[in-house]
Image (cartoon, rainbow, N blue to C red; front, side, top):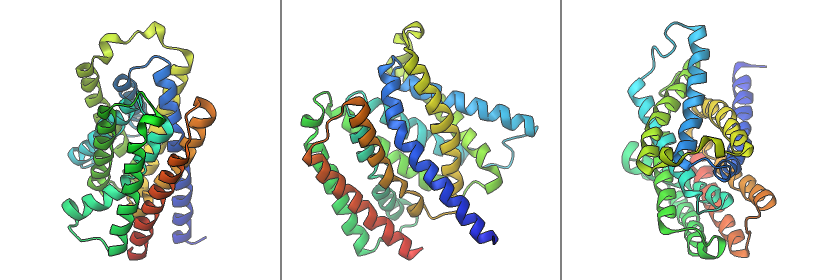
Length: 302
């Protein structure tokens, strides 16, 4: 097998692993919250544990495991991706079903395209990409207008939290792309998790999570969910995501968002009893169609 073919095979394996893992993390978050873990505290523990475990492993292999990294840029991306991107997503799931959260997060590639246009490369997207953005965002709007039927617990602040999470994830993705060499991917993910986890600790204090956290009241399902989120959702998936961003165009990497909501919606309906209505089905088609148009357009230009 040639070097190029081997790289493609590794990229495909990494991509499908991310699709499956991050498609199931919305379910894991739901179980963690139901198990008694407050949202920001849950996210903070997940990334701090993951970052410390990764640092310990890296430290055994090298006396200076973080040397050579653009620390400020990688840490900033960690705050955007994990503190804001993941933290506000977890917080929003107190009122928004896991599958619907995943569907709304699936619009992130549209925001990546717009953020890249307005703040990074400053190159206008192709007309078809703009059409795709309008189609996808119409699905988001339909979902939001139907939220009172899907979940009576959802409040405007939950939806605003998801909007902040989507924008933060998009900007964090663009900020770190191509910045971490292949051989430094694990160290880069470690820095992201430690920086993101540290800020999440402060967010937890501001929200009162640590003050009301009762360690003895956390159910076994909550601990299991936290372990799954830490090992699979953080250590494994974040490392693969950062590696992919260094070898594959961001538009292609972001196609994982086409798979995640389908996995999350099915699992949420099957295991959590979340409602799937005809309107949700239409919204799924619109969001995924719009994202597909944008990503396929980006692929043709790559």
